[in-house]
Length: 468
Image (tube, rainbow, N blue to C red; front, side, top):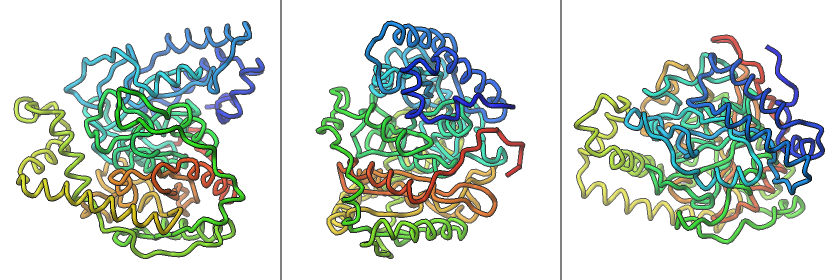
């Protein structure tokens, strides 16, 4: 299987070549669709493909170049959209059999903005039901595999999105993140993912988990991820949480040396596998030259897993409503069990958990008064066996993605960057977290850290089952 070399290019490389006529959008989309067809049986990354729509859009993009039209920053570049984000005319199943026949009437705001920037939507990628699982399996489409090792999961719930980018079908993808569902899969596949400040990217229609959900960029490098974030970010009246001023100019590299930087290997409660801990510690040691005011911090906050679980499962319970009792066979069994457990919670217990969220937010707000940047592992493990629901050694955890969900609950912008590989040849991610509304700083830090750490190659060729 030989990949078209144009599909291995970054979006920031492709865009000027397309605008100059050096790369044809028609040929690029044809190559992307061929790549999708080549890899889909192995990966199971797409739940809907709009080949005809993508070809029409590519022809229109090419005509715009010939006319000399003003072109957007993503003109002619193929993208994929996770099936928790609406694309007009395409299925909107959200990984749920309860919505098997649902078709979106309108584009979500982020998709509207992608189209305005010239991007071409190839199709929609797989997700677990309403994004619940930390791996990408549902009753709608089955199990999605990791291009690095087809015997492992790409994580979830944006597993289809990261597989699309890692294997070279698209340079960019949109995912969603309600507890780490962009950052963790990016960590498992050697990609860059951003969860911006809560509300920075408008979410509409409302998510099943509206107090936690983000739409975020997935890419192979920091420049592509930050470009995509700037395209999709911005206020939209359909999401009142999004009514913020625009993101400011990226923090210059020269200003980063003055940052007060904390590195927390566990946040104070996480269990981390040794290969991940070793890779992250080595990466942070390299970054000490970039951040002279870096110190290790043992505890950042108490574990807010109970809060995350109650809010997330409570949202899914509300979305499914009476279906849980009247048509339970349509609900993914792990989600159904979690909803039943949630519904057995007393109202007093639930309100106390919600109250705890306010305390958690204050804890992190106070932490970021003392520090300008926090570094942690993105995940406590690498990609695990495709047939296991949880990573080995973390089965007893309330929520295994210890490092990501605290910042869905508190709102701070966070990103995952590739920072190394295990001896088994699987990627490891480093999480970067900044104070509220400081995506400008996050962008500058991402770019500078990538220059120090280097980029992780991507598994452009889909690999044999159980092979590293």
